[in-house]
Length: 84
Length: 476
Image 1 (tube, chains in turn yellow, green):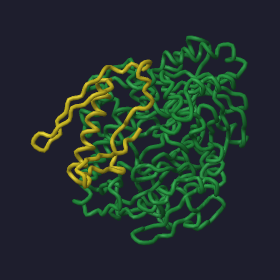
Image 2 (cartoon, rainbow over the protein chains, first blue to last red; image 1 turned 90 degrees about the vertical axis):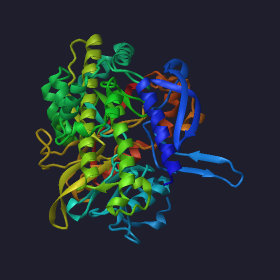
Image 3 (tube, rainbow over the protein chains, first blue to last red; image 1 turned 135 degrees about the vertical axis):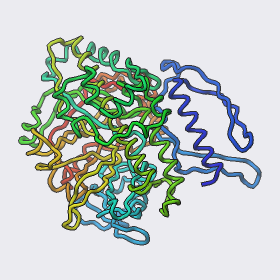
């Protein structure tokens, strides 16, 4: 597991935690790296079941199919399966 | 799954002989059609689990097995601490102690038919469900620790439900050995306002009718008659369990190398039972079991309140409560020797047979009720544990229908409103905050629960007692 991959799982779990405890959904993110750490701001609003029609609660990020890679063209991709 | 990779040992029993790093064989219990339908990843995961240190006898998969992270959902495996055995957060799952409990109502269809809509509304308004819903209870830090140590017993002491309920819950409502101190502040914060909430996804609250009986003796022992109305609750340890799963998955993945454990797949993150991480997880996981038991106990109280609003004379005693995502220390016979093993059941129900010392009256002589949840449009089942299952699967059986289609596919295929209308035409009342959630949970997105239960029955993991069909379903 690379540091980037662990970082992705940690970041997703941080978002899941904030969603759960603030009872919010987020729609916009500003993510950057500061001194090797992920630092981010997320914008969202309190969950409104009628308007957002949420279906499942994300329980946590897993290590399934976890990949953070840069391809030959310099494009980055990140993938992770979350448990619902 | 390609059945030619397996050796058929019985109508519903398929073996994967140990090769490579496997320490024990893999055993999948399923009918031939279920095997063909099963994801080939299940086979891979059964093989991977078979390679973990200290595993005893075999790595098992139940008839409803499907691809999970690390362990298959529907996976059962037991480890011996004396032989370097491990404990795995992925072997339990995120929704620790998710389970089903069923209540009697003493009513028949004619009794509830005139009030069905009012009852559905009362249940929907009384039991918080869906993403972001809050319970009415806010726990202080001291109360949180008491709840995590006390489980359903704590809830009963607080006035949620009846003392007699406790005899009808595994572990009599309280998991011994819980360590609230090992549960992080984050996990506790996630749970602060979630006690007595149903959650979302496949969790539900159903009013059901017994439409068929298969075993008169067991039905009589369980006090179930054809036509009876029952209430079933399916939910777990909510945010607290999810957070514990998340944190220990990482701790175990990081620590495995330190303990010299070679993981065939990093999702199999585990730690020796006799290690700091292993012991910390055990204490935290047991606290989460108590959280789930307390949660279902509080919901039971709310269900009784909702019924009292509509039908004040009705009592709702508890039939039984089962958990299906756990790791429990149990005694089992391995090659003629009695061993204390750490039995992981992930998406598998404990199904102890008659005479098991952990069962108490009235189930000691007949075996424990095994409550299997179905979908909102098909059926649920009550089975009874068998003596045979103790040798076949450490006394374990399936836990539900198991998905056959992803949520994404289901959402493309169905619209929630149409599913609700179609079910209404069949006399099933659905109440949900999210139409999208209903579409994702459409009955067609699941395997045939009848086939799953039939295979469990045929393999003697547990025997069919009753089939229940839904009348009201509250979805998160």
